[in-house]
Length: 210
Image (cartoon, rainbow, N blue to C red):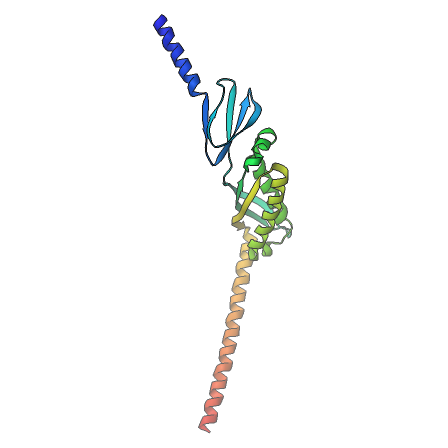
């Protein structure tokens, strides 16, 4: 029994020793806690903690990204669309304490904020403006999202991309009809120009023969 007890004690000691340190990568920072309460920030490298009393929660500080699929919304002219967009962001090392204390679900909050700001901006423009000037619409959303994410959560939004937009059937049909009509107009103008060129050529030829 003594031998079994010694083995058990040895295992416990080994486990506690193993749990007494942790490593932090260059792309992250760790929050050291004691019974769940904030103690301090730990930088990259080898760090110590008191087993069973202190814990460590790690946060990435490099660029992160998330995608939002099938975001349904309406333009100012009441045209429905579904969009897919991507947000790139980072949580600065200087903001780790803030997210631990005040915004533990910061990514979910940023997702909610991005959807809200996207819908708000799309609701201010008409559908043709989005179709023709997607880059300008994206830039406006990126700016407001950057400002709000920094003010509300201390996060840095580095990029916002509208990767896909599905317009409703009515708009697609109208857009296709407009494209066909435009193509016909261009074709008619080309035929008219060619007819004028042919007429001039015939005039020159007739003058030469005369």
